[in-house]
Image (spheres, rainbow, N blue to C red):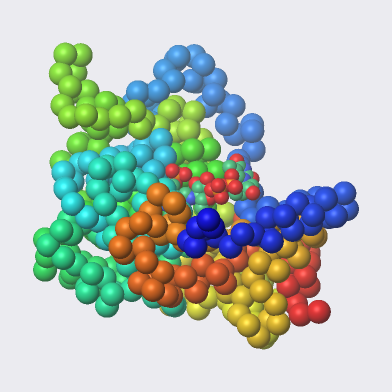
Length: 393
Ligand code: T4K
């Protein structure tokens, strides 16, 4: 019997194969992102240093320097490097010591809910706001019960959550707040980094992010004590040769990633400035295009231009999936982040909060969203080509 919650038996997937075989020989593929890297020459002295010292991991000298330089760059006091954001989220939940349910968004990368489940907790999905694409504050308030132990909001696409309401709700009910800030590197509001909100915020430095160390991440903590807890838990809970406290795991950043991170910090302002120009060009190119809706630029924050999602509405005269395939026929690999919703995936769809009528806005956004290529090296000519393909035939 067909599962009613499975993503539509996809004409899409077979069509993609056909699209690729038609388009592949004519054009170089253009992906949704392409990692920004420094010149190899800049990295070589750091690699020579690692080869000389033979310290490859476990809190080496580059790790120490990068942790401190990154805290300074981000304007946060307590930060622990980790090997990726998924493990960072898991460690943050472990450190909080909570039991029970964690309110979160279904409109995110699956790693968000996986971390909750891996920590032995239960995700409770709450619908999103149609403008911010983050947790809807009113629905969040209504969803809190005696079982709720924490909130894990996501600053989706680097757009800041309604942090004031989230923290009000958390204070009233004594809940932990752990932000999934995987997309939010360098985003600031009027008072400083948005990573200062909540008990912890977790960044990703994956290849696809604004700031990459191949793989990597960081947990930004409110207090020094919790940072020291994360330091310990990311290294199996080891305190010294004979003492282990808590069931930690291996979530350490290695020396290569830390060295690369130090160099990437020299360039990240330039990467973000380039992303900004690309974003502005997209707004100009897509202005007035029927049915292709750009998101409202965030007015409260200094953004990082991580992603360029558009919503494909009926006035386009076509569907999101048809445009997705049309782009692929021309070698352009836009992505449907985040479709399907996490709540529609097999391991989550039986939770009561995953019911589709509980999440109408998230469902509607997931069906219409398309993330266009966005990375610092994207050329104006490539953007014009994308806009031409998107425009109504
Ligand atoms: N929370 C949120 C909200 C997240 O978005 C993520 C990750 C996490 C938590 C977990 O963070 P980490 O544990 O990863 O630190 C990608 C990334 O793998 C994932 O990190 C990211 N979010 C998610 C949004 O995107 P995929 O499966 O879509 O990636 P993939 O391999 O299809 O890559 C997308 C495109 O990027 C490719 O078409 C080409 C380009 N690319 C990718 C890689 C890996 C490159 O050019 N070079 C590369 O090395 O998940």
